[in-house]
Image 1: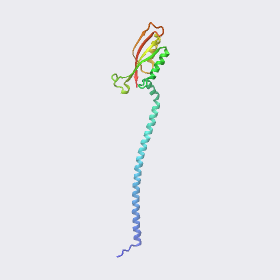
Image 2: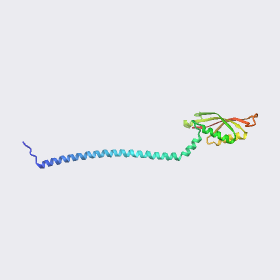
Image 3: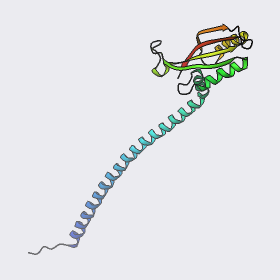
Image 4: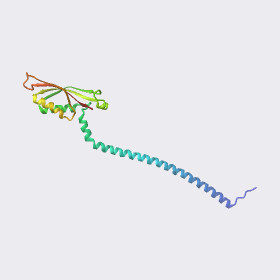
Length: 183
């Protein structure tokens, strides 16, 4: 038995085959476009995140630039724990300016966590300095009074000034103990 396939049946089978292939192609294309759309959404979210980070960085840089002067002013309020030489040089310059010989006898960084616990740990330090002074009474007194005008919060803990009767030059000498906040 021989099956006879007519030309119209061949065209019909071929058309159905093309239709199935085309439909399969469209389904695969739709899935591919959907996958690309999902990837595009993911990239869009990541790009938005990057844009937000860049904007935050720019606003942070602008904030840092606008507060730079204030931060420098605050840094001048504290004596550096690592390098108190700027503070000591300022003491020396002021002393020379008023005609007093000053020598730092001791410099010590001390924790004062028992004094004020509301401050963070890195702000709970103070620099204690013992200064030996020599000079005329007016100059020594003027030097001590100028300590309160330092850009640092200087506190005079105690001061002992005595008169040296054996010396005509620099007849007054003493020891001044001060402390400042350290950072």
